[in-house]
Length: 210
Image 1: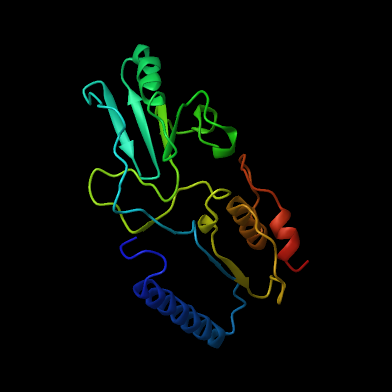
Image 2: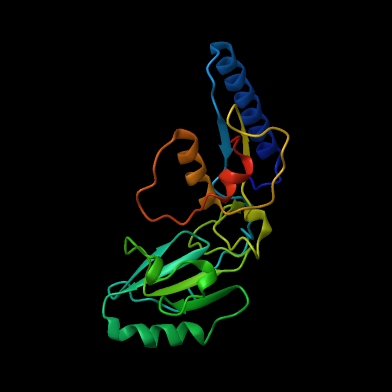
């Protein structure tokens, strides 16, 4: 975040993590325990246009609208639901190629980010989604960040490596959704999944030794 994905500082951090994982692997091997390692990242990282951070495109009365932002998107929680349509239309009128705006009732299904998917009521009434490398910030934007749609910002792809007695060796697999990792781990541990989840057993069937 501080230096960007291509900075020397980031390279040094990656090398430090790599060396640490090797030490962990070596020490576990000394125990003789049969341990599976699953090495993942929850997201990728891309370079941000930190010199031109996006501001909210209209003036917001914060006594009527609560603003929540993580940079790649902004959620507007409108206190009087009768105001949603007028605020949405005002933003829509100034939408440009740096961001898009939706009511939570019409967010494209590809984002999996609407009221139907909002189990914990964390999504606002109006959503502004930034297009990489643009980033919403009232202060200095970071040089690197995440949260963009992976099929449009390929740098969002995450890391996955796994090795151990229950995992096939020397196998390279195609890109898959991160939601496949949980059922794979549950299968290794012999734990039944008793709630509804988004993942399947496709990854487990590909990489686990039967």
